[in-house]
Length: 375
Length: 258
Image (cartoon, rainbow over all chains, first blue to last red; front, side):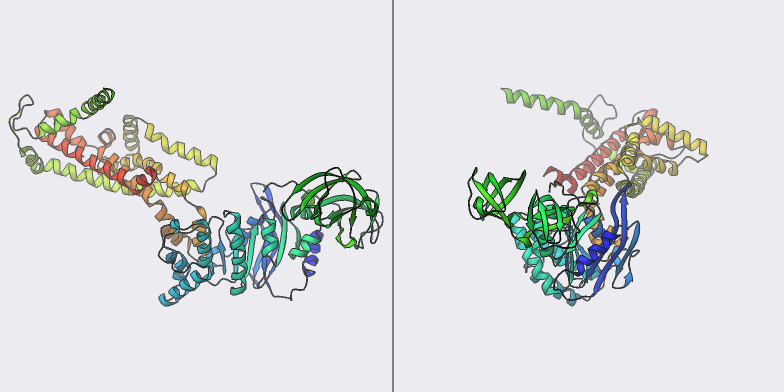
């Protein structure tokens, strides 16, 4: 429970966003499949017009959370509240939400227009209204003139956009997206990310987006919910998640990082690998073991005499925008991103600015630990 | 040289496969009543056939039973496939095994055991028992042709339909059913052919006085072979052949071929 409260506070600190109306609340949701716990007392609030991303490795419970929101899976315990109303027991066809599925799920025996009209016909909307909506939705997803094509004749990216069009014509208050870009190639994925942001702004509806791709999450979201093993690890804006990860799991999952065991000597002073570094964090107590996170681009390489600690470059890779180096110093391999080249074998000094040292509590449970993740 | 040998080989196979039916068909047009000599071309056996009321009644019975049993089996089989899809893997493979066994079972065993079942339950033999038996042996064929379609089905299309506001029933008929249709159609046609074709099981479950074409031919032949029977057999062959061609031309098969 304590974790949940911490998360809520982190959320409230989420930056300069205006206070918005809470649209969805997931309250103490638990769910297990075949005796295996997938979600454990999950607590989450989603605000109006927010782009929320549920981010985590496969099996972290993000898709289950989305399916509970959509009504396709019922929670074992807990409640789903939408706009002040308990919708836990309401079937998917009666919920004011629409879903974009991972594998498009277009109706292959219907034309594009029939696909998009599907929901509106059920609601018995007049024909002229439906036709207008189809035209509007196709324009929105940049596929005007595709009305009479069959889904099979479209590319993956186009099919995905039709799936989005089919969902938004129903004017849902919330659009749920389950790894919608997962099957697309990199270039198309990046294009679609911009498209999604544009649509979200144009439509002014709430997006709940599930992905395991941290870059995608950082690019698009207003709020990121990092999940692992059925627990929420951190809720916050992309910047706060990246710059101030709360535990080793988040730090490791979002981008590259150096996670180093350290001792908090006192407020604003931490001993990393036996050397004292100035930092900006307070309130961790005195002489307490902690973990520090330093992003590779925040490690500054200088001449040995100018550094706080000294080491030797052991690996060097050219990455295009920067060089990626590994520096052996004080018994730790530091990952460094720098635009300046330091050849392998060169002695260097290491400096880190105080505000780039992020202090974290030691993991309390397995799900907070840094893990090797294959995506 | 090699290709000529190949062609001869194939010709021989086809000759042995179809010679009996060929002879039967030729004889059905034979003016003379004996099999030994060709008395000239005639259609009189076909005419006689269509004037024979018993045979016409048997034909009617056959078609009625084939139609009803394959329709009912198609419904039951399709519903069974839907139910099996919802099962856990273990239960599903057990169920598939159970439904496949009757297909491998010898017809005579199925026939006799159905007969014994009807006797022990005190059910009166007649059209009803034939129909029940045909439904029983037809269901596995329907499952066999619908199940592969079911496996290809994308479950999220059903969920997508629900998501867009359809009721579960509407979602099934609007979205799932069209995807299953080719499998259902070929299952229906297969069941229809099987029913049309069956002799042994019908023989054991029909009771006195009711006949389908196959059992009628059998009784007639016992009394001595009449050329009308050649005509009848030829017609049955052509009918079944047409059905088989239809099954193979159905969209499901065409898609597989692609």
